[in-house]
Length: 592
Image 1 (cartoon, rainbow, N blue to C red):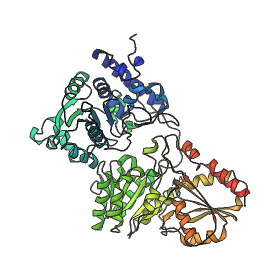
Image 2 (cartoon, helix red, strand yellow):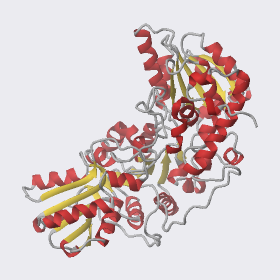
Image 3 (cartoon, helix red, strand yellow):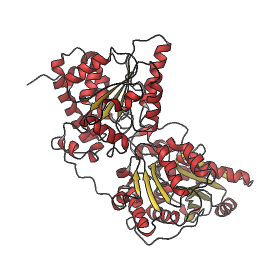
Image 4 (cartoon, rainbow, N blue to C red):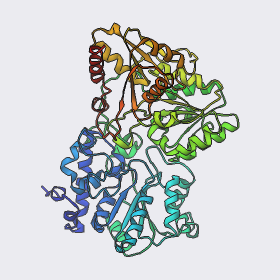
């Protein structure tokens, strides 16, 4: 039996002791290690399989961590983590108290920059390169590995544009596999396709026009070519770009054939690649409730258009895109553009539904304020993945949207408590809105089975009572209501507690709030967003403004970044789980 090469690799110093003849065997073992681990532990598979040879070559040629390597987004960083001292910790990947699924500066010296959102690597690496020059470290190398989907983003272009007029020692590696999570889109994709096929004239090279020395395209799975090319580029000063062509999912046939599914496939058979059956789940994903409802509304209203920045499958806009390709658009990783595109459409009488993950909507904050809200344009923001999302951790939790949206004039902000209310809010938003509307909902399955009911128009700014009681009012916002309901199942004296699903963060149901403040001595607010500036803060402002003296307890995400774990584990840690809500209710009852 051939001796394992990977077994002796604990850091890049060990890697550099290998002969080049041993590297293909290392690549084979590294790929198998990732497949076997992700098959049972879950995680991001396809992107990491696609960069195995590239990762080996980078750490073999460059003197990392002295030379600084930045992985854009970080979906593809598993080989990097395994080769940089985390092989024996990799079974904890994305688990509570385990290593992060993304590069993280506090985790390793080799993680030179924390990533999780796309298109930041070029700017970060350029900043490092300029700092090295200022400090006199002119020989230090700075490498940014950027995907073809990420490099099309505005921020990546901003970094390229600046780098091209510097003499910074920066190497941008364009990892071109023609796909992000969904297939790449746009004119740049078409340009790169022509470049790979050899039909672009050299004088038309867009990167050379930006003053980069351009090299490639080369085969990103050909180790000798990678090693020779990187070795040459190591000696060339100034901004350089290496175009590397790879295959997402390389080495696992199913992952190569079904690249969207195998981006993060869940559990699968490591030998065959076949997905393993999942535990049957009652209910429907909120994303599908959105996707099918929007399609139903689009059938009836030809003013409705759908926009997503690079998440048609994850957000379920794909259903409308398939039915109405001229009215539903994936604009690529371009959140700012997506929002202002919607604003432009709205000025012409269309009704744009912009479906975007909460954590990604942060990237378009100025556009929300300046281009939509300031002009009071009827854009409907469908804020997906709101709340704690679990294993993706701090970069992906949608916990800030309540706080950053409720302070914007003209915005309506709503959080339905279940799938039926989500469906009816989408319907309500389709009925000639006069203001921008943000509808937030979580990742995953809802509890309601029969959600495809006849539409009911909701009254903007009105909440609803779910349970009547005498002493305490619990005000929940969004689907965290189900945790309150679960807590009530184990609570004695439930007749002493009322539960209201407030639904609207802005405008608040002031009529209902006046009744609550007059009737209950104690009010508890519960949300799956940050407490600071959140829904509870809005209730506190109302109580203060109207000179009420109620005791107010606010429950939500504390003022710190929350790491990765299961959603249930993180709700327990942040004290918004059914168990912790039950404990607060029991304690509060004893003091009344």
